[in-house]
Amino acid sequence: MIPVIVEITDNDKLYYRVFKRYVRGGRVSPGAFKFKDEYPRDPFSTDAKKLTTARDSINRARPDLRGGLAMTCLQASSPRALGFRVWNDPEHGNNAHCSVASEHREDKTLELALAAWPVDIETDSCFQPWPELSVTIA
Image (cartoon, rainbow, N blue to C red; front, top):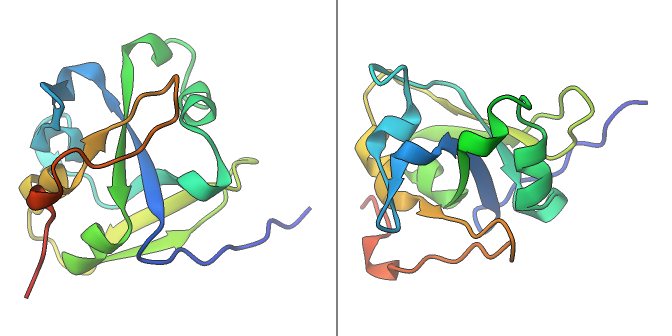
């Protein structure tokens, strides 16, 4: 069956799985957006919140990794404001899968981390506790 591609608007939220060590004190570390703590992940995979739950997204991870993962959330407008493309890119039966890819090779991991926030997997709540930390590019 061919998956239906869904438009990802700027207001949509994106789930992004990270290792728990990258979430401390309610904040997300720039290392969450790096490959082996060195190079920026580009592209990186997310799931559209409107098409899944945080629990289902975690459960799609490899079973040996699930216990060490935390869920974070980004509003789609944040990576777009930093020059990233965001699109629904279903794969392996996951219709919620979205890709986030840069048009450049600059390191934007700090800005992505400031735009991300932790998600409570049990309640599926994806809210930004510090609206003043939103990434805004003029």
